[in-house]
Length: 325
Ligand code: GLU
Image (tube, rainbow, N blue to C red; front, side, top):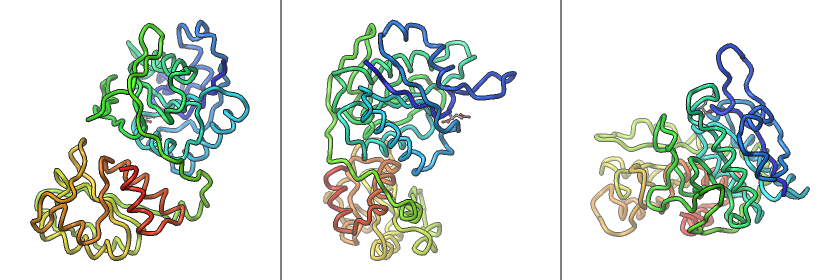
């Protein structure tokens, strides 16, 4: 049984102050008690040793390409270690293009390696077990953390410091690692993978803005957006509402670029046809906004950027959100 492990930096690699350099993938795995006992042969590679907030879409797609190559060369699964800050976005980005049955498992740590109760080793051990598990095959990209297995499309970072930060609101974990055994309880819906080979210039140009709607929002922040961005995700109130006065401005933007409506609440979907006041979901849909379904604003932004980078038009984008949202 062989698993590739790609190390990308993050808290799991942060050294104590005296050492200076980040821990390599080999150093991270050397500190994991019980790893040798799993019988999994690890092929460890260092990729980008950066905080996860500095990762780019292009770098994540390069990591997916490396992971794909490892699978083509015989790895039964792949583990990616990275910072936790953007893990919910990178996991979903990888999931959208991951074409293999082999699981792609992302993990990291909330506590640095030198801290009491460092969680990196336990997370790596659980991630390797999931990556090597038959039960996780076909599940796409997964986030394994705190002995829980989460679907990339639902997982969120819900706490700034807790080691139990990753959760899937409204869905729950797909599975658990118990006494070293991977127990999958649920399956998330899988969709046809998007093509992974994007023209890098198009990807760069497919800039998507995110606007979080707030009380008494006059939309001034949206001024000039049409020239710098190709798409917009709106994180609306509750079921997908905005102040009535903001609706015409969003409608105008929706005439120029895809504008996707999501909820800023953190769980649940936007509605389609329950409220009719100006700024309601029905009004915004009539003005051309696309319904983001259950996708949270950050994940909707990832999907919209990939669709735009792939050259999708408005109808194709609306259809993709209807299927994947
Ligand atoms: N929590 C940060 C991250 O998501 C860690 C920062 C660092 O690696 O220096 O990457």
